[in-house]
Image (cartoon, rainbow, N blue to C red; front, side, top):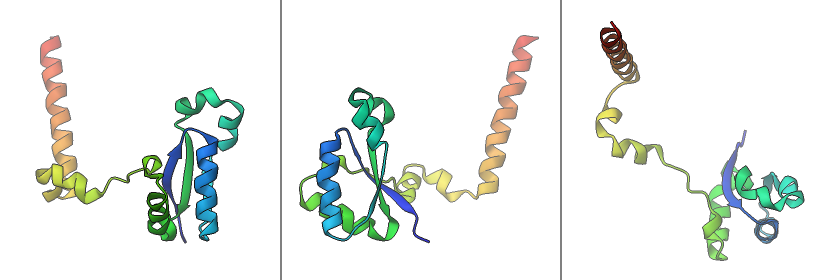
Length: 120
């Protein structure tokens, strides 16, 4: 099963149409969200988060390359890499899940006890 991955977010339907036709001409199907709503109400584009273009996971790298090659890279959504997140928190990445949960619950318990002592 190929799941869809968010590739790009557009403010204007005209920009979406150009990129969508580029991808279709290269044999890449895309799924578009919120296009019709924003066509009817252009001014709420930013409130809705723009028009979202999704592609199949297997086509993501090729679609991204096509968009960059044609100068539309400003619309690309950069997917955060889990290893990148862990590299910013080296202590957290070295702990197992159960230890992380125990540490969080212990911290919450200490805060609740501290709160109870202050309210007495």
